[in-house]
Length: 283
Image (tube, rainbow, N blue to C red; front, side):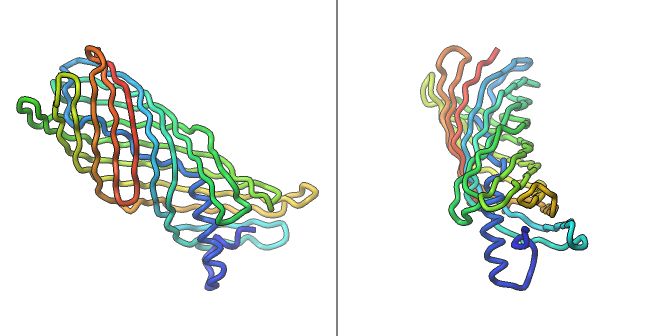
């Protein structure tokens, strides 16, 4: 049923598979850069920090090293390679609880617990229509540290990683059965930057970052005929790799009350961008 996903010498088959994979991957993905927050920590030793974060991202990834196995009631089992495809314009939002702990002054260890949801519309291949996934588990963590401090200026860095698993299904309009999608994705970010206190209540921050994404992707289609009898089982698997790249970020932090902060930031790289906001309370 999904012959367009298999490697062939046919130009027509390649074009069809390209359209199918682009739509399919966008629908099933769970990818987004997490907020970096101010790169320089001003937390005290043993101090706690907690809050909420929301981010909305659009990004591109690459799907490689694909393979498939096809089991059929009418033909022998078939295996082979699937084509490599660049996937563009995946939209996703994330909502996290954030917990930070001051190991030392200006040295913070933090974790994130939350969920991610993917949404996509595409007219490239009509049978796929629109996909809107459920929220999937999303966790992460990292370290934040101040390297240098001089009056209103702090220089620091962040190292963070996140993991998201997204599952869902795509129900094409011309087939009797949906495609079931599973994806595990890990993202790593390393950022340097400055935090400048403009007034007693408003600060600005920003700097460069490096990001890398890797993971696994699976698509399974179980076909039935018009009387509900099983006819075919296609299972495709790939490695998911990002075109690892460098980017930059800018943000602002506003102290709404004592130890209560609002942050807003924008991240941009060659194959991804993110808008994020959060509220944090220090104890």
